[in-house]
Every structure is written in C-alpha cells, then in structure tokens.
Length: 555
Image (cartoon, rainbow, N blue to C red):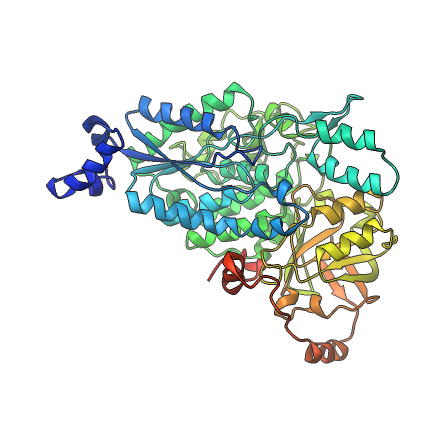
C-alpha cells in the first residue's frame, strides 16, 4: 500500500528524508503506514471554506481509523461573490490552474500514497479535479457542503442571487434601504457554498456524478453533522482505494464525463461547467467539445429547478434524495451508463440501487420534467462560430427566441453604468466584450449586469451576450463564452451599436444580421487592443490561455 511513499521513507538512502519526518513529530509507526495527503482549502475570506478545518479533522480521523497517516497541506480559493464587480473577478477563473499546478507540485514532491481533496467553492473543485487527474494516485473528494437558504423578515426564503437582484430593484426605485438591509443580513445565513445551484454546488454535485465523491458530497448542508460523518467515511474510504489501487483516471473515463454532462443537464447546473468539464477531461487525456453538449442536452430532460431557475435550494435537493436520486431517474431511462467503477469501490449501478426520489417536485420524474431538454444549450452562428452557452432552464419562455438591436460595451463597468442609468430598454441585446479569457484577462463573471437587468424587471425583455462568463446565480437570456472572443478578432468584436442580433435558443442559433461583405470589411479595419493587465500572473495567463470553447485551458 506504500507504492509511492516508500520513495521518501524506506531504506538507508532515505534516512535524511526520515529525519525530516521525525522533525514533523511523526513516529516510525506513522511512517510505516501509507501517507495520505489531505488537501484542505480552509481560509477566512470564503464563507464556503471557513469550516473546512472541521472537515479536515474528520477526514484525518477516518484515515487514522483505517490505518493511514494523514498529512495536511493547503490549497487556495477565491470567493466569487466578494470578487464580483471589480478587478478581483479577473483573478477568479485563473486560480483554477494555480490550484491544479500547486497541488500537483506538492503531491509529487512529497510522494503521497493517496489524496483526499477538501474543496468547496467555484474554481477550487475543478482545480483539484485537474490535479487529481495529473497526479493519478488514489484520490477522493470531500467538499465543505452548501449553505442553508436564508429567510427574510416576512418569512420568504432567499439566497445570494436574490441579493444581487435586490440591488437592481433598488436602482429602479422598487426597494428601499430597509429592504436592501433585509436581504443583506439574511441572504447568506450560514457557512457553506451559496445555497442555489450555482457553480460551486454544480461542481460538488458533479463530483458524485463523475464518481469522485461519496453519496451526499454535493448536497449535505455544511452545518449538518452528517457532513462530519461523511468526512470520516471519506477518510476511511481512501484507504480502501489505496489498497485496491483505484486511481482517478480509472474513474474519470470518457463514459464518466458523458454521465457528468447528462446529470449536469438534469440538475440544471451552472454554465461554468462547460469550462470545467472539458478542462478536467483534458487532464485525463480525453477531449470533449461543445457539440457533445447539445447531443446530450437534446435527449436529457431537465428535472430540477433550483435557484436561480426556481425557488428551491440545495437543502431541498438533499432531502429529496440528492444526486443519486437524479442519477437513478436517468439510469432507469437508459440515459447514463452504470457499469463504471467509482470512489466507493463499487459501480454506479451498485451505488444507486437503493436511491429513491422522495419529492417529485424537487426532482421531477423522467416523464414529467421541467423541460424535455437539458439545462444548458450551446448556440452557434456567425456571431459565435466556435459556440456560446446559455443556461436555458433559467430563461423565461418569452426570451427563448429574441431579436433586437445591439447595445455595445467594451467592459462590464460600462454596461452596468448604462443599465443603472436606465439607458437599456425593452428589446435591447446588451453586448459586453473584451472580457474573455485573453481579453479580460481572466473571463470575468457578469452577475452584476444580469442581476441588474433582472432586478429592474427587464429579464423577460432584454438579452445579454458576452465573451465573458456568468455566475451560476445568473438567470435570464444571458449568453456567455462567445467564441472566438473579441480580443482575438472574433465577430463579437465587430458588432456596432444598433446592429440586429437574432437569438434562437431552441434552434441553437445566434446570428449578427450583417452581411458577409460588411463583416469582412469590418474585420480588415479591426485592430488588436493593448492588454488590460501587463504585469504579474494575469498577464502570463493571458498569453497562455486558450479559447473558452476548449475549457480555457493553458498551453
């Protein structure tokens, strides 16, 4: 079972290495056991991570119970909500690769026999999944868990997406200072990843779907004692994976990624999964593209309408049977494969055999879905030849097909100012460009503009398209990841104020109604822009990052 750590603990040649383990306070008996790296993302700035020291202690207890020696080291994490709306959001997506790189370096430098990853929020989960694929020693995930929904003073349940939209209501004169304070103090009542099906919870649910997390990892609330028990079970389970040498690439196969996308569609996950799943697959030596997304979406019904698509939350999904109950619905309909091995040491079929849907409104049965197609759609056309994505499950029916004049902005700040000043009118198509992976750099989320549009009551009348991306908390006709991006000469960079843009989500099309000759002339006149950031990590990132259609991986 010490397949790797013998390189730092065994033989006279490793006496210097052992002397340093003794300096850590380890005993010979502890060194003789498998060494398990516990990658804990605890920090004091992210609400979803403030409790991870408790999870880590429980994981380490489980490892010791099963005969291993746990050794903790850290990973970073950004709170997207706190980073939102300013330069900080340029440093969110970029951390995914920092997390993967630093975890790979720590794991291989110290030759752990197995790893337990303890993530929670947005880029932390995919970053650690990417690292798991690279290192490829037995690995399992135990996340921090979702936040409970908030409750306003009048008894209504609420969440972070409502909080952002409340600002739009305030700007429109539909909410006063007292109302804002009510949301501010009650939207986020506990530690944990924010309570809707936003990016963090989407990715944590997909750890179960792809086979890298135990049952309940995506849905058990952060404040429940069941989360501590899950952590202990995870610590014990890693020892079984080490003994059987079940590794991430044994679990994260092409079929597993196919399953993950299908479950994504059924759950109604964040569009950010369309960046992260290709990036994780790439680390496994598997290439998945956006065309695969539509193929799966077209035959996979959307079974869940959690916030922001509806008025239910992660705690409700947990009580209804969780991710396994959704998987059982899909498996019984033949929409996912069930013969693959998972981190439980068993197959998916064995894992979900006793799963039961306990609430058919939280998890709709396969024959009574919220939508006959999946939660995410990929659109193509002359505006996005390489594709763009929309969370169609959170789009009002009135906006599934829309045509209107472009209102063009070269940054998020310009757009949000115009929205708050009442310059955006019904029928408009807001275009925010030069916010892509290279142009941002860092591909900022546009939750502030989309929430402002929704909060001002325009979400059923105004569309927004961008080469940036969206928070999982975004709803409405919000179309992101437009590729190629403006910074590399994509069509979105050629759009002029007043141009007509046609959107057909059911038809999977998005077009700029400008003839080819005119577009060719505009292309000749287009000039690259000076980078917005020219120093530090963001500058290096901009030089290495690829298109969002490839998952914004680095080359």
